[in-house]
Every structure is written in C-alpha cells, then in structure tokens.
Length: 420
Image (tube, rainbow, N blue to C red; front, side, top):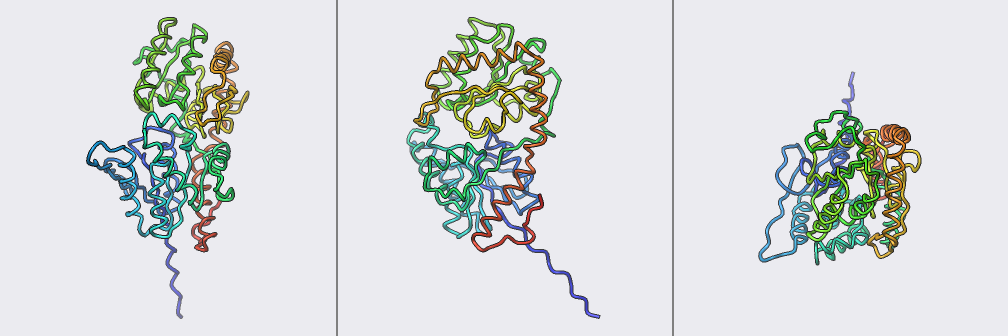
C-alpha cells in the first residue's frame, strides 16, 4: 500500500532585525528592547540580527563597523554607511524590522531594493528631541530626514506606547493610522527581581539604613536630570540621593549636571554620583534598596527603567508625560507628577520651579510614609510580572508581521499563525 510521505515543513518567515545596539553593547532602552525581543522572536521566526560594532559570537548575529571617512565628517554619515552594508545583507529576507533612526535607513533601502516589507519600531521621534542638535549638529537634520522617510514609507509602524502612537500621528500626519500598532516594552522578571544584597551600596559608600532616592538614566535633556537636581534641594534631609548616570550627550549638559551636583553637595550630604553602566547585580541591589525611584523625564515614549524598578518592588515617582502613565499607575504603583510643557518639541516645563517643587513634594510624600511606598512597590512588582512580559511583546510583534504579509497577499501562512 502506498503511503504518502509527510509534507516537508514550511520554511519559517525570515526576519532581519536591524539595530544599532545589541548585547554586549547596550546603552539605552531601545537596546534593551531589541535584545529581549530577539530572545523571544527566535522561537517564532527565522531571526537574523544586524547591528553596529565589533563582531559578535552569537549565531545569526552580524555586526558592521562604522568606517572612517576622509576629513572631519559628521558621525551621522558613518551611520548611513553602516546602513548601506546592512541593507545589502538583507537579500533573501522575507521582512525587515528596524529600530531607531540609526537603522531606519537600512530598512528603507532593503524595502526599496528587494521589494520586501519594512516594519519600523519607534522608540522616540527625532523632531521631539531638538536638544540633539547640540550633540549632532547638522547630523540632527540628517537623522530627522532618515526617520521621516522611513516611517512615512514603512509597511507598518510599532509604537512602544499609546502615547508614542499619538506622537507619531501628530508629528507625521502622512502616516496612515491603520499602519501604527502598539506593542508595549516588556520586562524579564526572571532577570529583574529584588536583590537584598548590600555589596553594591557598600562599594559606593551608600548607607543601606538611610532612605534612598534613586535615579538611573543617561545625562541628556530628555531624562530631566537637571530638574531632578533642582528638586533635590527640597528633599527630606535624611534621604540619600544616588545618581546612576550614563554618558552625557554633550559637554554642555555634562558641565551643567556637574555644577548642579557640586552645588547640591554643598548644602546636603549623601549625594552619590556613579558614572557609567552598572553591572546587573549592582543595579538590582540599588533598585531594591531604593525608598523611591525617580524618573523625571521630559520626553519618555515608554520608560523601561520604570518597569525595572517596579520589578524590584520599588515605588516610582515619575513625570506624567509620554507613555509613562501606561506603566506607572498613579496612586497604584507610584506617583505621577503633572507637568505643563513647551510645545516646541523640547518638552521644557513652562514653570520649571513649580515642576521641581511638585517633584520634591511627591518624593517627600513617600519618604514620610514608608508603608505607603512599600504597598505601591508591591503592586508595581505584581503588575510588572503579569502585564509586561517580553513573550507577549514578541507574539504581538509577530501579529504585526502577519498583518503586513496578509495585506501584501503573502500570507499569513499556517506555520506563522499565533496562538495567544
């Protein structure tokens, strides 16, 4: 009797993920997003990662070095050079998925060259970060041009929050709203969880028995560090302030921050500044021991760092801007500080003194009531575990891929259908 052989399994969708940051070289939230998303997507699609920098050992991860150009060329041109190489390597992909303007051009070029769909995740928008002109000069105009071209032509856009989606449609009115999907950032609560060790605190001279207010972020206009430092003059004098600072965007913001820290240290003790990326264990210990985690951002499409604090059981005080209210529930997992902002894209508070005073009042409210802070922290931990898993983010991202292929008439194929 003839028995028909089983059909060969359908090939999985090949997705080329295009990004500047990828482990072990990560410096911001977009890099964390890409790294965690990639882990989960590998179970769903045939994933190839293309990133910047030194060679990686990981299978299906290719890195491209920025090449030196003759003369004193703007760094943005070197970025575009990498994008050309990345796009060339995307031959054979079924779909490309770019993250941030640093890789958007590669997605746009591959889309045009090979006729394949381009999905772009927006972690922030260049027109809403005008302070980057300090950092990039004419490169800021170039980065804005790249982003606009890529987002307006992408087959689908992924926004990391509903607030980010609203920003996309406001800044780029040519974008079809039906092409913009929301997939929230996630948190790996197996990796980010309370760590009650004190070695990191002791190493940096932080007293584990004193109240602790913690900031973690880059030294950039976007993160609101100068506003936090001005608010800190009014913090409860019993509290320590620990600033875990990433690399400054410009010499100007570096000098402004250093001057404010010096001024603050003249009137209160317990001000500790830590420069550079902390190792995971040290970060977890600071997040766990913090009485309050503060996110004073003036522009924050989502804010993974708030999820990291919540996953360690710490109450959050954050600015009520961008996608932060979608993460931090006011009165439930933390306190939100309202702010009226300039509408010129800078996010500058209309009344900086009032904003700083409100920020200080929210921090002091939790410092004065540790039991309340603990309840908010416990609720934040529960919310991080149940609502913000990266597996869910990957499944929703795959659903966007399927919708793009279906619209183009290429699918979805049975082997790509989600089960959620």
